[in-house]
Length: 444
Ligand SMILES: Cc1ncc(COP(=O)(O)O)c(C=O)c1O
Image (cartoon, rainbow, N blue to C red; front, side):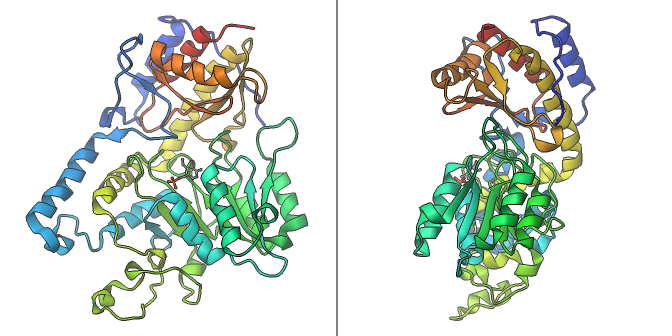
């Protein structure tokens, strides 16, 4: 783990702010001008919000509105014929998104499909890959798993007639620690893996921002005979991914966080090539699972396709696919390598400033100090101890927004999350966040 290095104390209008503005002036990757930023509350000192909640809901690209309106226009103009005659024909619409989605997650195009929502996709994946048998029945998740994943795996256990309390095993960090250690996950799999049917972990943890070692954990799980799937809600568009080479069995992600495709946006799914070419895998199916060439022959049995499309069920919601298409294009244009480079600089800069702020205040950075083990998020525990700062965290986030126009979010009981998003956040935003925290939290 890297040590954290403190930076100069922040001071409005001081040299720290000038440095941040100068860093922004030098930057050639940031695409902030292409996004719509909400105004600050009237009471705030800055007219524009410093937006740190892109790990919850990304900002709206300016291009999105026109893309959605174009689909409405095509519907008005072509009605049913839009399936073939729209500017982006609706019948193969999802295929147009495939290549960019695949590039983003390090997959082959046939391993990727944009469909449904995240938890629905996790269930579809589990319908195929969670096959409890004999003593191999367990599902391994992290104790800090997002609640939806927890509910999903517990309901899968019940669906299979199993006791969820016995079936779902929650991996805890060591006492006194916030993040999982790779060696502990790997050790667990070496010892208990023969009982585990499915490993389902978050690639980047929603609470701590920890970026798990996906290749090492996947290899350990597969060596123990488990299926290994990943929830990439907080990883996609945030950290570089190589799902095919990492031999992941499946993964699912949402598109409304770092992918900026809007509230409840259509999600994505990865299924490794070794599975997409296996026609005998059990899958839940619908008419969009069959090959396109014979779909309208309305046969009673489907013709399996050797791609991740085989897990599609329904025809896609085109009005909701348009924002995903826009967003994926932006990622393809800039490239994850450049975004990651900028993200490391931006998060590193924020960390340097915050290290100085937290030094004598009841705040603690719980995100790993090692840049390789985190993405674009720093989580702060407010109140100096687990569970002790409930009201403070919510009150602090509220004041950051109302007084300073710094929009962060709270995960109860005591964590404030700040995500400097490389696509649109600036060094000056980071400076504002640190300056606001220094002003709002008194030294202890
Ligand atoms: C890690 C994680 N998993 C699952 C979900 C639930 O996603 P959805 O409502 O799109 O199914 C979220 C939502 O924020 C999440 O952060």
